[in-house]
Length: 310
Ligand code: FAD
Image (cartoon, rainbow, N blue to C red; front, side, top):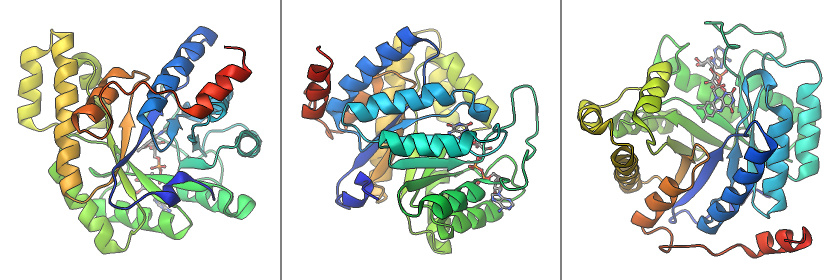
């Protein structure tokens, strides 16, 4: 595996950015430009999400290929359930051909309109089955991440069983964990300790999403059942109709959370960008992890642009 995660200094902060594939060609071109600008912030890699049931498979691969082509490393998300026959095999081969070295191996959510998740194949019931499959078919060619849930997964009766299943994913060959979004740092800290106490030793990257908009934040956190501390809720309610103030609050909150996590020994962070560059840029500038106004285009990006006649 030639993933950058293996080469990182344990004392230095590092971060990954998550983007999702846009629906249109124009949207894709727009996002590629943004990713180019984001690359100046030197993310360890860029996560590309995978639509439920493989609904974005082509677009996710296309976007991963475009990002790899800029000389940036990617991490392609992949779910193993509700997939049409052959999609998984083809996707893994294409990912390899595109030079993708990181995968986030997931189970997947219920198809739209269905409340509960049911396995559509005996072979793939849980994310661990995907981890095992990739290791069996591809050995160590991919660096594999898995999902973790500081507040527990909705399907789990108890948090300890959830941690046990995370431990099993590590034992099956997972290299790192990315967590579900959370806004209560204390909840994360307790869960993190419980993971380490159980023997989960691989890097755990907390999922951080700078809030961009009050209503979509409430919708998303209600849907996921995310716990929002009272003070954050009341701060946001006060400014909910002022979009710029909400965005600014989202940046300040992400900085506060990341500072607290850094003091707690966390070095790697997973930032959900919602395909927007401004908030993550400000967060990293305020943390002084990047130079203010970093607009340097990476040499590899310049080369790729030159090759395309740009
Ligand atoms: P699993 O690890 O299978 O866990 C699901 C539940 O089953 C948990 O309750 C767990 O405790 C339990 N469990 C696990 N293993 C076993 C076992 N062996 N036996 C019994 N019970 C078990 N979805 C998408 O469709 N596309 C994406 O791009 C995407 N990206 C995501 C990124 C992150 C960082 C996270 C946290 C989630 C993402 N998801 C995505 C959502 C994810 O697919 C759902 O949260 C899904 O419900 C669970 O996926 P998982 O990989 O955690 O599943």
